[in-house]
Length: 379
Ligand SMILES: *Cc1c(COP(=O)(O)O)cnc(C)c1O
Image 1 (cartoon, rainbow, N blue to C red):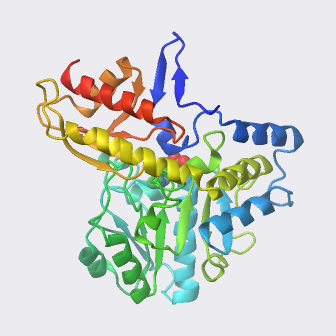
Image 2: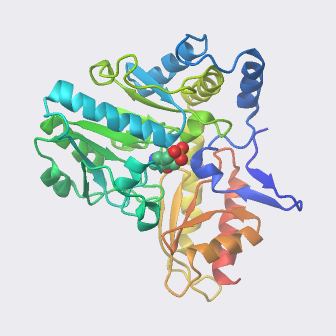
Image 3: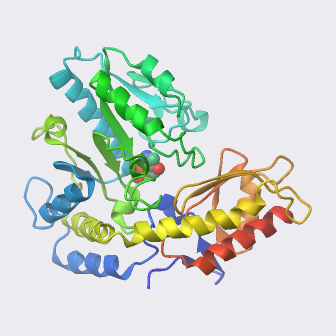
């Protein structure tokens, strides 16, 4: 059985509602993933990309089917996949769109989180993540997330792409206004630029659909994937795009020692096979509606006489909870939850996010909400 529970060294059990920031969508130790990894571990783990291996082809073919794209470029971590997307967008801008080399700009969103490399923190507005790592990489323009007019105004002749999370996870599970992703798609089409969706945290069943963009029927030019693509066993990331875009990468112009290695490809292939069956998406959608229904009474409801929640945002089995002023801080609430056997993490002071493995049961979702109500009311 895949597990949603973990045990610490003192024997205390916790329901893991952080789930490795959604890397553990399929739970801890999913038997299908573990079996596939074991099998490949004893066969072959690394050829380097200089030589072909028998696992990479089937993996990228399955992932191309899942994303509906022609080509896949596998990497390891999420940040590397984002970096790959940035490189592809720039090179595409110079080769295909005709932007003068060195002049490309990419529009990004306020409150974004795309990883920790120097280029990526260059366009972060989180001081803790960014400060004292300069000099910063130029070529990025920031607009307000959810404001289509602001995006339209920021796009000019130098713009090659818009990079966004369809739901901002680290931002606190921020869901843009209905229609925003469709507007982004239209703006990109009209300007002839790439829509790059960072679905590293929002994708692969978390929101009740394969991709968060599916909620608006939007298909980006580039999907950026990671986290759950490795099933929580191993770092596996990738970008997916059509040939006109991804063929700007030629042999030697990008690479990775471990990217697409046989062990990663075997695990990634099993993940994609599980997702293609659709069960995790359906389960996340159902459990998400249970979670939302159970959380709603805590919103502005006085829980046990104490403050409740100011707002909740739920998409699939993924929720951001804002605590009412006068209540515990996000950190404090997380610690109270931990003492009640629930792992969750705060973000931005008074918000916590909830993302249990999709293998949790309805009863466990109930247990979680009861623990939240109790933890809001008393230390
Ligand atoms: C986690 C995350 C990343 C970075 O992934 P790493 O594997 O930590 O490098 C990028 N984008 C989003 C949206 C993420 O949630």
